Length: 464
Image (tube, rainbow, N blue to C red; front, top):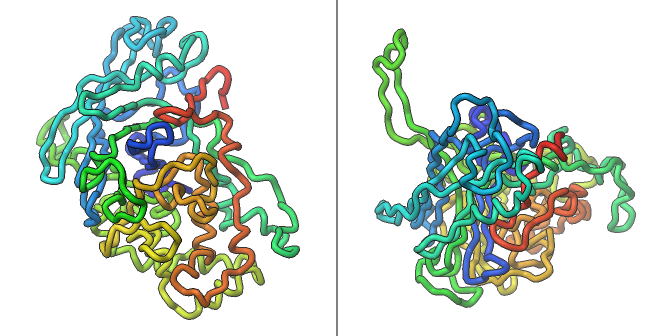
């Protein structure tokens, strides 16, 4: 789930594989928006001597659409460069790493940040910013927190950036979800009143104690909004932005491979990965279309609208759990397109459906995380986001602690249909779907400050 290994080709290219995207109004700086794009998923902490890193040959981008046309009005580009200090050692570090310029750190990585506006004008904001090292272990890195803090960079233009290893805070029971959509609460297929009889087995967080590489940026509010305002009312349409991330590689053509370097042509950047909503390519797009989806911009998502209107999982639930999703089955049999899912995933939720809320970007169908920047952070977050009455949660952007798996399955199961059809009554089971996990099942704890994701697991204490 989310976007770990979501398509055949990108699963072979982890350094360019976007696994999770988060976008939210910063809880400790509500005049800013934080966007986090994770790459290089499913990292084992004990991975030496060649530890994980960003790709020097990959262009990483975070895009913001401020006017609802599915095209970027603001893009931040991140490029990386790796430097080797000592050619005569196999070690990542030859002694303790106590600073970002430590002579003991043999393989260092740096990055640049470039801003691109809606007209394609490029502005380099920073060059050769150091990443922190991978978290090798306590002897190699006595104070990892300090190194990570030193790797948070404040740009002269007002943004704050970080790029480096973090613990994966995404939680999902992959073994259950992809075992034909097993929902552990429904194994017994019995409901008592409005509560499940019991769990057939304890949910397992399959991504716990694994690391990722994160690109995080905190942007002043007025930079992402099309009207440049810092504070607005929650129902102001100018408050809504769309966010997605992408990774691209240079196109290379070899006409004669008999001799190394002969007839090699290097072409333009070609997109190989992208991510907006956490479930779109993972469980909506068919296997045969997944690689194509990764190569296209959001403006082409109308091609995939039919899969949103009639999602495969909605048809599977009544079959896998007879008697629990009868109303959903009747809805499926009508053949009516799921306008509720189209709104959630492709256009945003219009004003008037949920009290004091909207995050629509207009008629253009595009898979983006839509964030109403005028809705302030919630002090006591509800993991079920919008479905739990928390207007600051998914699918209004995405916070790190949002249970996007349970939210997504509940929506597909029918709980959001009444937004567009007040006569539809969701099955009791639909509102009870949950994977039995929360952010509390992530061993590493979230930070209360930028970049918010937890300190990465080290290979000594968490060899996994």
